[in-house]
Image 1 (cartoon, helix red, strand yellow):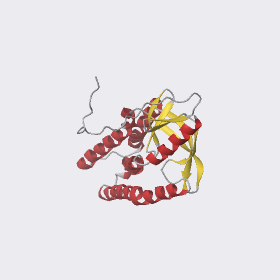
Image 2 (cartoon, rainbow, N blue to C red):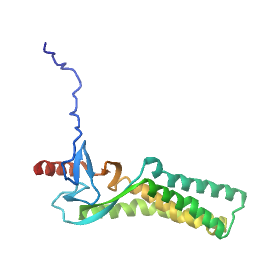
Image 3 (cartoon, rainbow, N blue to C red):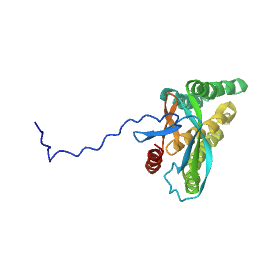
Length: 223
């Protein structure tokens, strides 16, 4: 018995199908996500979605992946350090000397970085980068990253004027690490990066949909 379609039903979008990589392939697109192997070289398609007619150059980018819980450990470490400094400033009892600075470096930087490195996977990817994408990155850096870094560093200098021992007791570490962490968080919104790793394949984020479409066309033509 044939079932009649409901003319008032909400149209359903076609479901994305889970594709499998072709044997020997170093990259493929599945469910709208670009997957790559370590050392893969992509076609001359700018992942920022800029027109293929825009001049550019080939370059290598590093891929770093780690579990989500490990990725946030450094941020938790920086937050803990700021809380600790705030409590010390409130009591006017800031410890000074090399031992205090060593502890700050170890707890706030070395241990979180070591944990991320031990739990993560690293690789390289060779891509085509257009000149327009490079100019967009520079413009964004000056209008977003630089002001954020200036505000944090300026705040630390003001604290040092109020509490002269602030920088010598480890505040210098915050002046370096906190802007770096903030810039890293801002860059994550745009930078092509690995967000998943399975069976040797890195799944990439922040690849423009236009670039995905072009890569899918190339992939179909090569089959």
